[in-house]
Length: 432
Image 1 (cartoon, helix red, strand yellow):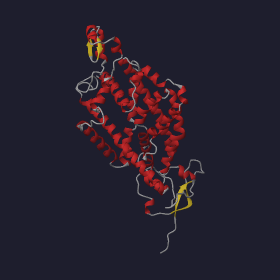
Image 2 (tube, rainbow, N blue to C red):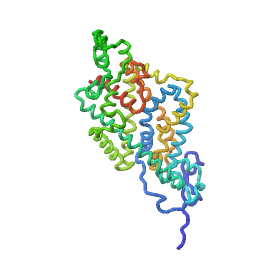
Image 3 (cartoon, rainbow, N blue to C red):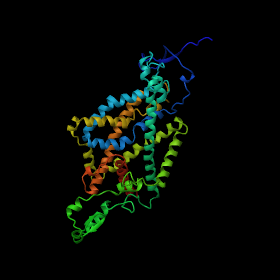
Image 4 (cartoon, one colour):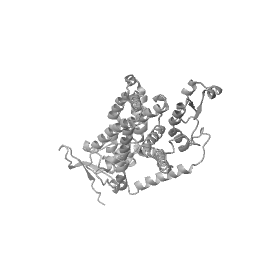
């Protein structure tokens, strides 16, 4: 039986500036029929770019970056973040977008890359491979990296979808509320004595009473309870939105020894979140590529609306100044630069496999380098802008609670699920 001659795979000739032309490399490609698997492509002009934007710009920008910024030197933190974006984030993103489609030759015993035009390895639209197949093609010994990326994405997917379930719960609660948002006031049974309502406190002080632990006390009552003005001033004050999220939505227990029970409302919200994911991905990139026109752009509409309202609130200026005031001495700390590097991985999500997978559906001539630059700039811009939105509302909360801005700031999910519901109360009142 005559042995078939090795196939020749085309590569890009970049000698003619930006014009794409296909030439023939003399590097033979050995393999079976699965070297060119059937794979769909993005159908719309901006499907990939918006999918990449929605994948890279997410929760890490909304609640993690603002907290890191204020705790690591304020506006000065933008310098290490930008530097790490340039020297680490952008190259990693570009590499992964290219890796999905680069041309790799390998053998079973060694890891090597046969000669091809170097720009083929830099341009990202050829082989159409996911993370596991891409690393297997590059070097079989490294395919564990691909499996690791899939594992990381699976774990992240579980808790990200839980956050979507919380969001759905808030949407339903705001719709079915009887004339007002449920987190606008301290309500039983989820509120505690630390829940603080500015309107109730003002009503007490207007009658020469003192507001303490949700009670109006006169001087005689204070004396009988052994309270002083200092006790009232230094009392713990939590906004209703914080207690609603902690005690009602999360139902946090006293510790790990108290597991609690399944909550039907949250279980239903989580189920609906998975149904939405299924519907968005039911037809692959043909369906998800259209969904991202809403999911990637609508958050910017919401952020702009919240920013316009937030900067008009009393105390917003103090919150923004607290966020932006630079502490240049912090730039000498290795921890600040380390936090900036870690934030890059939260922001752009490299090494999770998603970048490789999204890029694998690109057409041959797509300019993934330009897409990387657009997403990187959008990422740092969104992070900075989200910080302005959050800290304008944090300044308002500090003003309402009559406490320092630093005592209101929290990190993690609480920063978003306390701040945004709180500003929604103001927007809801204006709408009514």
